[in-house]
Image (cartoon, rainbow, N blue to C red; front, side, top):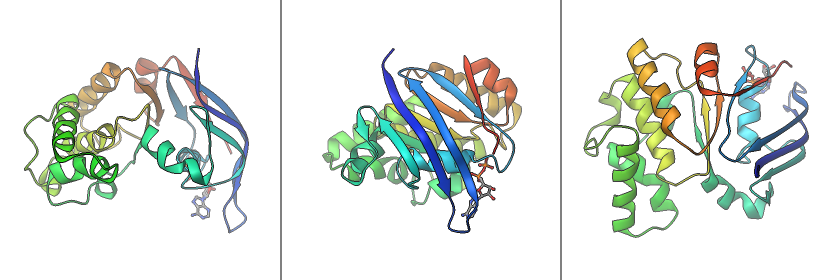
Amino acid sequence: METVIEIKNLTYLYPTGNKALDNLNLSVSKGERIAVVGPNGAGKSTFILHLNGILNGDGHIKVMDMDMEKGNLPRIRQKVGIVFQDPDHQLFSPTVFDDVAFGPINLGFSEKEVRDRVREALEEVGLSGFEERLPHRLSFGEKRRVSIASVLSMSPSILVLDEPSSSLDPRSRRELINLLKGFDITQIIVTHDLEMALELCKRVVVMDR
Ligand code: ADP
């Protein structure tokens, strides 16, 4: 199996001296869907922020044959799409179109390509035709799906989701699980939702301090 993420001896101290990651090792294979679980404060968010170089601890991280270093960050950030827990932190544009188009526009695609990507990404999350809607007026479940679309529009190879099922009602949660089940790209799902982890993931990584 091709390895898409390789992390060796990753340690991270916050400037406060708080050791959030202590010698973390993990490999993820292409197409794998893994759950990362652990109590609050275990370091899950800190771990995620290392996957596209927002944080930079000691140790070694490789994403699809690219070492985590400054020169590779633009490509790594296109390959690793992170969906944050709070959609209000991810969505900031006046329309759904603008939010989902933001990544592709930044990657320099033509207007037509941007439009095509937005349409396809919204289709993938079951929100076709939502282009002109206002993100802040959507339901929480719809916002979560627009957040996912805003990452899918960059055609990532690895999708990282922080607590994707949190704050969803049972029906939206079910729709989300079915959605993630349908994607064949590599997924790293940080969650407290153990039933979802069991249903979606063959492997569960437990973090504790
Ligand atoms: P989790 O996502 O599993 O709840 P975090 O990665 O948020 O865990 O936190 C891991 C540890 O790092 C905790 O002890 C937390 O208090 C600490 N921490 C998180 N963010 C910061 C920060 N910005 N400054 C200092 N310590 C932090």
